[in-house]
Length: 508
Image (cartoon, rainbow, N blue to C red; front, top):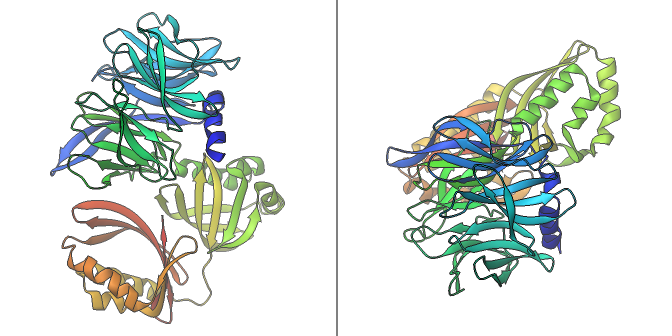
């Protein structure tokens, strides 16, 4: 039932979704040191409001939906000229998912009119003139098999269904119910890929629009459904600030393709590649850092409404690790309104900041009433609002230099792959968690068992500290890891007691 409600919301309320601030970024796919990486980032939408659903007409033009004059129109970015031109201007509706029609100087797009009518249209690329393509189908997403056959996600019987439509002979056939939004022509084949949501685990499947046979390719990355195909048959799929890859011909499972450490990139919602496969369009929502910074500026200006507007209605405020302090932003209002009014010299300075996925960790130095207070705040951002905050406060009478020394000894032993020196920095009853309190395992011997083979089979293992926050007996490390030729970021919270690391909490 939850899936059906979500699908109905997605299809029927596109006008609401269009208010979300997203941007379309274009990257070059470049081979560096026998690895493909993303280079030459440019924001090709650069617009307040909804900019999303990119698709390439060719190697020099990117289409996308973009907010203009309180509606969503079709925009085309001319890559060589570095400029945008508008394809549509529909006073009584908005366009979504613009897609090139094969063999024609036309594009197709879903129009949502102000009266709620939702249909698939075709548009002349030069004039913007349009006409309905499929009269009786409420199309949510679509792609073209050829100039006559459309493969689409259609709202039927309270679910999205996979539908094949032939515009030449006016036929439609439903292949499967309960599918996702991502539909693509598979390179060098006569197949279309789609996301099946029939089971508890989502799957990427293929369909032959002529024979109507379907076949599983692989399970999706958990809870992700947007993807694209590179010309060599590699699937790229985004989740959070990471992109994963899988090639059915050569790979047995997903592996990391790229992890963004760019603070402008938030959660990835769409990706698309050009026909040559040397560029990638990535859609990202507003960076969590931008939201947290806006909150900080409102705090320092003591503007209570602006401050609270950065928080979700049902935001939760905790003391580390999971002691609830406030539930809901209005419960926060009395405390902060009084604080802003009475403490005229109130000011928060950020000493260190770690950005990790949807989380921003700030080491804050707060001045008020001639007092100075330090705190580490873990902000979790969801749908462009601060959804959760966890405060870590320092304990009194703690020699932080000794705490930092112990954690550094652990790091040095890790990089040396010295399993005995590494495990000796931990307490006998060391406990390992995922943030905030998901227990993983306990005990130094279990830790040694888990890391021994890892150290032996990873000759290039290395961890560099990008940022470190020390807060009493706790050390928060932003780590840049090299593992078997791949790089990734991680954040760990180390807690030290009696000269040993007694607890480690990994942020996901």
